Length: 320
Image (cartoon, rainbow, N blue to C red):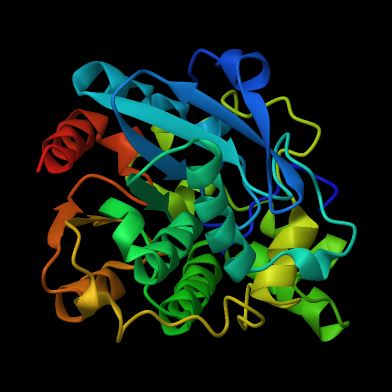
């Protein structure tokens, strides 16, 4: 992806946030920890029970999630932000095949050990929810609370994201869709530069927001690697905006979620056109022990559109 602002229909991250004051501490006040052979950039805010924020993507960094800082004021919570392997200020792989969901899950365990933490609370947003769920399933004994924010329970749900995103573009931006189809007939696929450029003309808020006016571009981190496109297509497949493959095309937590013992909070957005509501509510069946909350005036990022409701909810949940 040559244009860093390009929108990918399956780019399930809080990539563009409200125009907010930058967080210079994200570049200067963190430190590196060597985890599974790579240096990962970690920033901590506040004191109290540790809450690790796992960004979306796959391919995004932590910077756009810094509005969660207010949790450290509202509750006895220490926010732990980090750039996963291949993202932000952290090391990148020499071979893209090193980027895997399994590696991301193990890096959370490595981070827990590096920070000398006992149990950890996890908040995984969008793609980050895959990492959080996978970690909680494998390392339940080390997981205190699990928050699945606008997440995905299976490859089938991610494929539905692709299908619905493309439907919305086809009916809402038919002129862009026509150009995209012409490019695909000539051999372009999702990972092709021209394919990405065409998708980039669809406004972020069209697919991801209830109120697009709350989203802008000024919150982007001035990192040398703000979004890793090679990592993204390695994990979703080379034509992953139409047909998911590789790691994202095979994960499935549906049968395992019901066995989780820790408190679980699931956050969804009524106007989320990627983590679509009809698939979100299936969590009630696959994870019936969880607290499920639908935000009625949010898309894919309730932390941006309804923080006044989501943040107190998180504080109360973590106090359980």
